[in-house]
Length: 552
Image 1 (cartoon, rainbow, N blue to C red):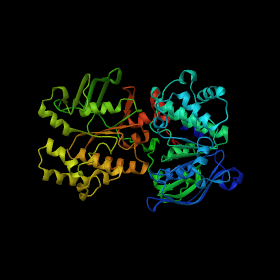
Image 2: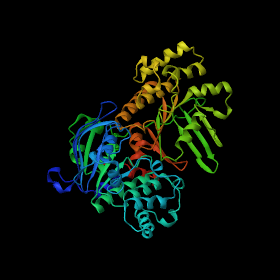
Image 3: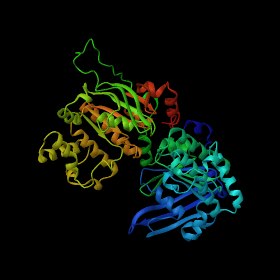
Image 4: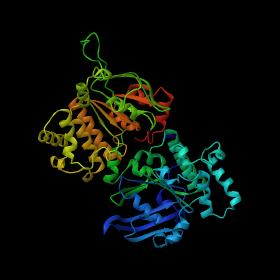
């Protein structure tokens, strides 16, 4: 977030901090769960008043367990713990559940990742805000509504009185997160814990939430713990960064120390895996379109061509009058927010949905005029990798069968032939041939996505659609998958359409970038032009919302 970087003061050096500034003191914390397995190992860390401390680490680095220790809230009560978590002279590890209930929400507040899950769907917003005051404050009931209305106005709602009687389902995800922020700061807590609070929010809501967190830190002198695996975001909003890996605190320091002079290999690896948006890092190779005067006119010019394609669901227009021509052998990133229409467009291209209007040409073939035999050929021609690697693979079948089934159905391969090919493609994406005999639940999320990639490639597609395929992973896993995909694209001469909300990913992958907004492509061109010098206001807004642009 560029705006925050200009206003955020440089953090004080740790050795200049006063002991009175320490609001939370964690010393020699060890936690083992699940019959002795290591959870946290010898964590010592302080949180100071008036700072944002980012807990930076890959998924499952231990941040969630550390927060559970701070709030003394464990799903698994069978734990072995030692060390201390001291808040206002009290070791939180030793407090009863009743004592902790009095602290949670009042002194230690949480801002969760999924606001829809955190809010009660059966209660209106006003009642949920008032409930916080009724449980944790002495504010008279006659004054509670006025207090809540002031909170809603503070977090940016222009007409808080009308919002008061809404249910969460009537609000957008961004609005729900603003409600959660209002609830978190309702009683001016000493500690605010923000757990990836901007995940899957629209660009405007992301900027608003981050700005509110930074502003609240300055206004209240609150200590804020921000959990993230985004190095660029941590660089923008943090005063200090604590890097975690495998339940250990591997490095801690100011932003300058961690970002500019990292000491630990884990930190260096995470920083190195952040795709750059600097002009020098963007692809500069110009991909010219085929020339009628040179090429045989009977040959198709484009791998994909859309002419006036539209798709609506009831009263919602998902895709509106799209025009697109995509050359062969290039990578096009289509960027946009969650409801821009990217997934609908992907499904239309591969034939999972049918357009209401318009024409779709794949490698020169008009889909609407295809015979049944041609449709089988088309399924081999275009393949799609889905966002969620957990739900896209059948948990009942072995990996070899999952990859080979398409070969048996669409290419009449025998089961034995299909299994051999499946093993070849597992090897191609960096897995082992013996993995064909395993089931999906025996793999990590990143490896499941590699299996999905192998399944798509086994049919020898010419056009590959990747729908947000790295959005659920930390930067290190993202880097592994993206670099593999770039290598395979060159080796197999693939044309790839990459759907993403992450402009950094688009910068790393793309020859061309198309910006999609409310079902329309509002800007398209070479990646170096669109990302370095966007012309449309929405493209500029997306770029301004990217964190850490000046550092990465």
